[in-house]
Length: 412
Ligand SMILES: Cc1cc2nc3c(=O)[nH]c(=O)nc-3n(C[C@H](O)[C@H](O)[C@H](O)COP(=O)(O)OP(=O)(O)OC[C@H]3O[C@@H](n4cnc5c(N)ncnc54)[C@H](O)[C@@H]3O)c2cc1C
Image 1 (cartoon, rainbow, N blue to C red):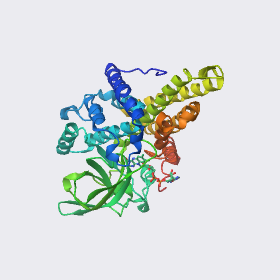
Image 2: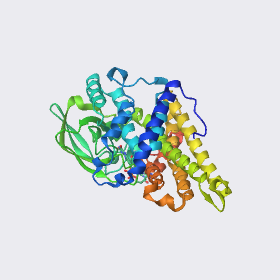
Image 3: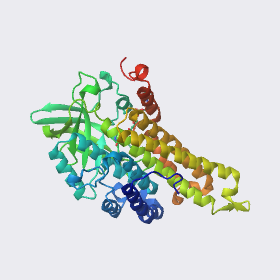
Image 4: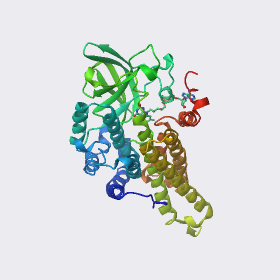
């Protein structure tokens, strides 16, 4: 059930159908039957390779790769909307799997915009050839991520991870944590301070760091409450040397990261929407087949009221996500505010949708093998991805009222 259908192009409709079939035939049955897999403490054993291979055969692991490197041709004027539609569909089956795949799309968009042709050819080819190849984007470090989102330009807000210029390249030292795909990725984009004498918006650079680089180490898998089929990781860089050619963006990497973050927030919000859609579908089916007090649950008005609230919230989130996606596709002036609104709204409203689902399923809602509590866990984790709710509120106000709020999270 998709309460209000979208005005999709023919190719979006076809991709959505193929994805829905993959989810209904493969992902949903896998997740339910193998519910213990999520809790396997050997992260690489959680999700079988066959799932990534099937995703790859549909082209949904490599969206965002330019056609000249073997990627799928997406209509450029609708690209972010297409990302959103596919992200929602995959997450309807499993949010962690969606996370794993969408990270590749997001980093592909960044490499497309900022990497030179040699890097593009090298890394896109490797990504296309190997179904297990994943990208990761590492900004957050133990010192905290909110300062990056707000763009504090004070010296004190500089990253602890530092890159020092040496003959022929850069030596990076530091630590990154909470990184999506951090445990499994083959290629990392690492942000580091390159000029401690200026604010971070002018002194942070980004680097292309392959996993097998000497001095780069995946320290551990961060065990998370939800999205557990995406292995989040902690990274350490100890005297990690990369050649000059691996400098992706010099000094202004943070000021220019919007190219990554705007589509990224839409893709992630749509992913949470997919979790809400799954909660709505499962609950609608349950209340129409399960009776108490001599009648189907849906015929009890309090139940109907909760179900209506779920359907309304899911539709409202979808409407805002698509409006924001269109704004990013068209690069309109309000795209910054809208993509932060979509992120916040999708995180808070979908969590409430999943809470309703848990309530309406009774005790079953709390059982690990029923798959309902998983939706609450998967939705809850999104509160803290791509900036917290509070920080996103700051960003909305900064974008809407720049005269008085534009700099309040930074020097006046
Ligand atoms: C599942 C998951 C996946 C993630 N994936 C990635 C990834 O791929 N790459 C990456 O780089 N990061 C990733 N992150 C990190 C994520 O972006 C950060 O966790 C998030 O932005 C919050 O940053 P923090 O954890 O450092 O909290 P902090 O910045 O330390 O914030 C702690 C608290 O203080 C509040 N706060 C901070 N500053 C202010 C202020 N000025 N005013 C008011 N309140 C404030 C925050 O809202 C929050 O409540 C991921 C996180 C999760 C949970």
